[in-house]
Image 1 (cartoon, rainbow, N blue to C red):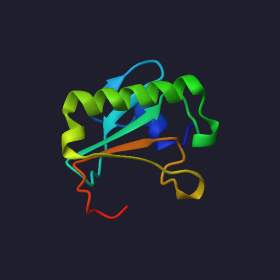
Image 2 (tube, one colour):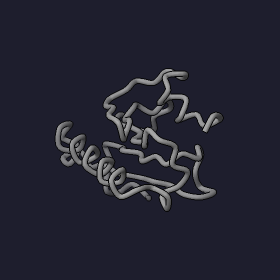
Image 3 (cartoon, rainbow, N blue to C red):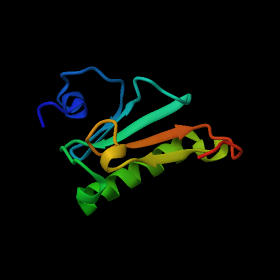
Length: 108
């Protein structure tokens, strides 16, 4: 999609601090982080909503988020994985937020 900010990041038209990239997914630091660790995990192909993601891309996203949690030690800090859909999406391209640290007393 030509107007999609995340598609432009995938194409390199908008700079981002990349953490990981393969043929299915891209992980990069959020430009406006709300936590010290705030990564976005997106499909490299435009997927408008969670209900439209293929099983293989969803598994790739899950596996990479799991790798990040384990390799950075986020389980000890507490972490949150968030995904919005439909009208709740700030950018209409499927994206998962990986946020840490999370205190159990924080409200959802």
